[in-house]
Length: 309
Ligand code: MLT
Ligand code: MN
Ligand code: ZN
Image (tube, rainbow, N blue to C red; front, side, top):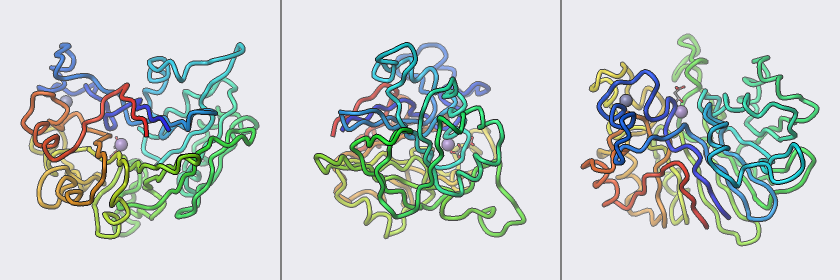
């Protein structure tokens, strides 16, 4: 099984279009220690058959162009992308679907909750329903994703709810705790290669690591995990916004309640941060925070990174 990191940054990317923070300025200036990153997406293949896209970011067109494995391989019009899964309805994870128009067959998987969001936005009808079936993922129920015409990809996927929050644009103050979020709003995926049995977890959005979730990850060959912020309050502290990571539905890396501490001792063979916000100092190759994360056994993903399992 091969995994391609198409976009390692959180929503907004790095540099973010309107951010003038020192890190974004370094990225814009071409500083080699501040490598630009596009928005949250990976692709996976079992080796034979096509690719499964996990999240469709607004940068998808450029991401496909930057990765030859995802270029058309035959005929006048074709794509090795057979199916897409969105793990939530956030802009960084669904808006790239709009770049997959042009009459190309493709299957779109998401929880019923996220499918309802897509169905409720008529702009997504540019994906011709006759060519682009939308299929519901049932939580905690492993399934084999298939192309639009029913071909299996050699992969098994299980979606399970993780702590999180409904998409920003659906927050409803009146809907009760956590803005009316329900379990299906944020899922993590377990992806298994049917032939070898090896697997990995993909959790680009996750607000906390309770014991049951830590147990789920224990001993895994690979986890790609929410790396949005280093500290919970880094955005307000930088003056980059009022919201903490927790308020945005993300766990921070550092601190006693952070992900680095929570994963210590779980025996995960390869731990990789993904969905990294432009305010997070681990993006900078020469930062103390980068050294600290790496010393704790974490890798910081980058665009174009390939992982073979
Ligand atoms: C998030 O991950 O918190 C969202 O992508 C934020 C956003 O919608 O910009
Ligand atoms: Mn996001
Ligand atoms: Zn910035």
